[in-house]
Amino acid sequence: MQETAALEHPLNLKGVEIGKVVDFDPSADRLYPFNFTVSNTELSPEILADTAVFSDWIRDHLSKVDARYGIGGYDEHRTIYARSHHFDSEEEPRRLHLGVDIWGPAGTKVYNFYDAEVHSFKFNDHYGDYGATIILKYTINGQVFHALYGHLSLDSLTGLSVGQKIAKGTAFAAFGIPEENGHWPPHLHFQLIFNLYTAQGDYPGVCQFSQKAVFLLNSPDPSAILKHTFKAALI
View 1 (spheres, rainbow, N blue to C red):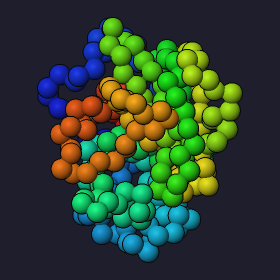
View 2: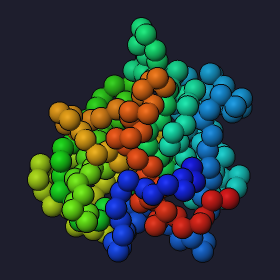
View 3: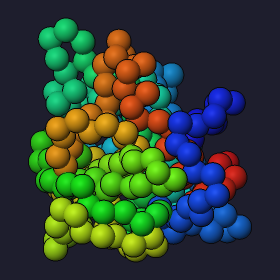
C-alpha cells in the first residue's frame, strides 16, 4: 500500500472511528504487497492470459510468505490490464489503477467501515470488468463521498435497494469467484470517489495515464480508510 503523502488527506476523518473492511488480526496475520508494474518480469503474458493460472500465481505467492492477503495498486501504472480489451482504446489504453486491491480467497467477507447507504449496484459482466459491484455513499464530518466495492460475489447484490442503510460493521458482501468478478483471481477492488457524476453501479477503476491528475483528485488514496484495518502489517 502506497505511503500516505505528507500533505493532508482530502478526506476529513478527524475524530471519526473507522471500522474494518476485511477481517485481519495485525498481531497474527501478514499482508503481502503485490507489484503489477512492468518491473515485475515474473508475471508473464502466459500467466495473465489464463485466469486459473493467474489465480494459482496469486495464491502461491501468498502461501510462500504465509500472508492472509495481498494488497496494492493505488496510483500504480499496471501492465496486467493488457489481458483484457476492456481497457483498450484507439488513442491510449487505460493502465493507471485508481483503487487498492485486496487479494484473498473467494468468499472472504467485506465489512462496511462506517454507516452508509446504497448508492447503486450492478453486475458489470465483461471480461476484465468489475463483475458484481456495490457503491456505498458516506457522509463524514459533513463531507459526502463514495466507496466502490468491485469483484464481489453475485450473492452480494441479492436483496439490495438504492437508499438502503448499511450500518458500520455489517458484513454486506464477499469476494467473488472469477465467473462472478470479471474473470479475475478473487480479490476486492476498493476505491474512494467524490463525484460519481451520472455513474450507477460503475465508475472507472483504471484510467489513461494522461488523465492521471484529474482521476486521482476525484479518487483519493484509500489507505486513509484501510490503515484502520491493516495497521502496520505490511511485510
